[in-house]
Image 1 (cartoon, one colour):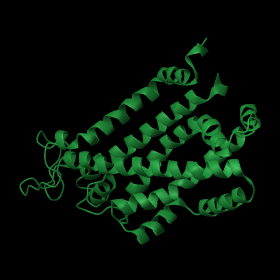
Image 2: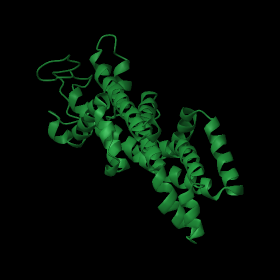
Image 3: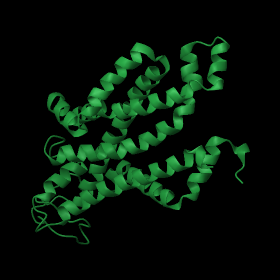
Image 4: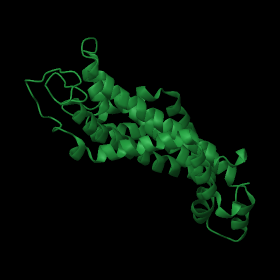
Length: 283
């Protein structure tokens, strides 16, 4: 029997630790983030260092991931690409979580006409395919790092707002919230001190699923030429450059695409593990 004295978050931690698969992939996420942060130290060559004597070389002791058409070391570019892809994904997801949580919480708690108007806007935006909206916005705001973050943020908050609103609607009529109202607390205090703390678990789970979605969206935009452009070295840019010659030089797309796949898989598995660990109804 679980020890309830350790509290809810202690139980979540213990249940998550028992999920060996999720713990393994959490280690992979930590490794990828550390590798991205330490790219200048770990990369054997400079990101844009060209070598005309090593064009399109395969895997070797000097170049573990091979080289590209300009003789640049693919391992180094993959490490630096991780910095861009992970930074865009994490920053975008945090921005989306902030605005989506704010709108969803206020809409769900206030209700009435404001809730109807806000949710109708969300429903209209939600009816469009995410990729279509991202492409339209990215064409308007530009294709640099700032433009990619802005365009992805303007789309990613929609799902977050719907999730948070649903949680707030389920919580705001519980006895402890009604007691806070009876004591005369202000609505803002009730919302931010009583309601939102009880919606943290689904918000965290949503964040873990948002990050891989953003990584995939950024990679897709860069792959089709609407995202970051060379000489930038995000994973999407590397995959876009590599697929054209993949028949003869498969290493050009194998490693950046593999990095995208592994990262998305890791975040999804960890997200599933967190969802199971935070589901108090399962215990």
